[in-house]
Length: 84
Image 1: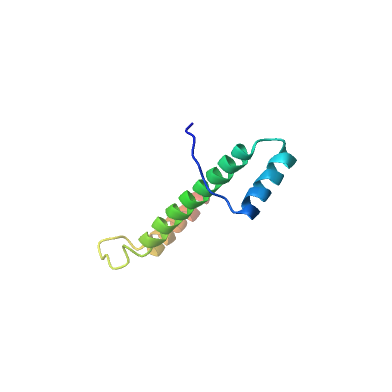
Image 2 (image 1 turned 90 degrees about the vertical axis):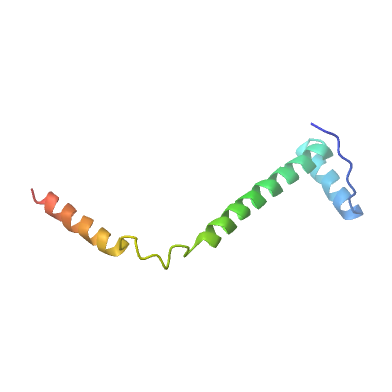
């Protein structure tokens, strides 16, 4: 762990101190927890942005199977297998 100096507004400092007292922990631990949660949230947002940017990327491809037709065929074959 590395020591890092940050600047907090009076409001932030008072809130961090109050949270630390309520939780029975240190102000540093409160700040580390907040930073970890922010990193997790932003990492998830980054993954979601990446997934969203890939949406439709194969839209114009002509060499792919028709998923609806393929699924219908599987359903037809599955229904026939149930009768056996």
